[in-house]
Image (cartoon, rainbow, N blue to C red; front, side, top):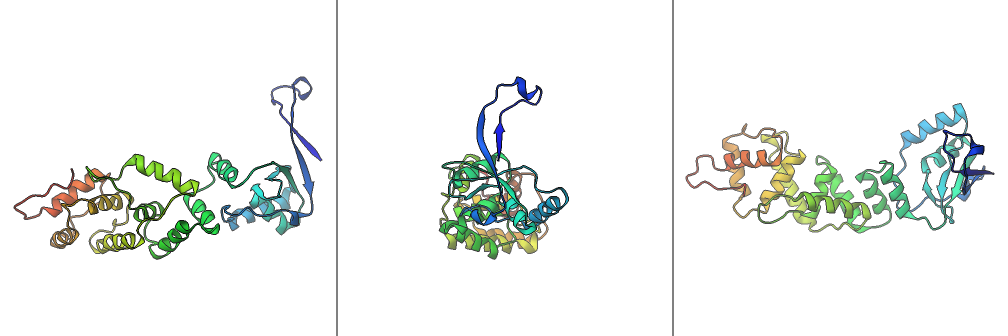
Length: 267
């Protein structure tokens, strides 16, 4: 049995005021541990790297964190690698910890991605995340963040741009597990419409372009069929732009090609 102590490395341990925090245990019985429902799906390559390290150097004292139910809070890759190698493992028991602490720890360590959160909540049976996974499988030519925007139907009125603040709030909600799919049929219709542009523009699935088109779908002055008609007349007109405002200006120019009554799509 080991004990963790707080002690600055710059001084001799005997000269530092020390405080016992958590007991570190060691066991060869790895069957006592349980995976936490909703935790991210383990990365096989990471497990293999850890296996090689354990075989070469042995299991170092890098404790996994578990709660009183022996559910893994942090260290599932170390546990799975230890099982494969047949090694002992060190662990610390933290009372009252749950999936919330799993997310907090991994956010602080910058380990979790949106895919991890999606897979985690989907494995817990949260319907919106399950539906999102299905949507991504069907629309794998779009980035996850754009699929979230498509399924959220996130746009604002007024200047018809996707609000940065709304997207930031959506990110927080998504990672908290409370994000909701809105209109899946509309999401799929919009994805299919954007995909129609592909023969005329290879960058049809760039995030800035997708965001621009989604905002234009909410603009009553924008007719997608009319836009496609004008685009067919100018099949090379769409090019990469640095931001959404540039895309809007370009699309407005394409839309107004040979039109007497010019339409303002930017405001």
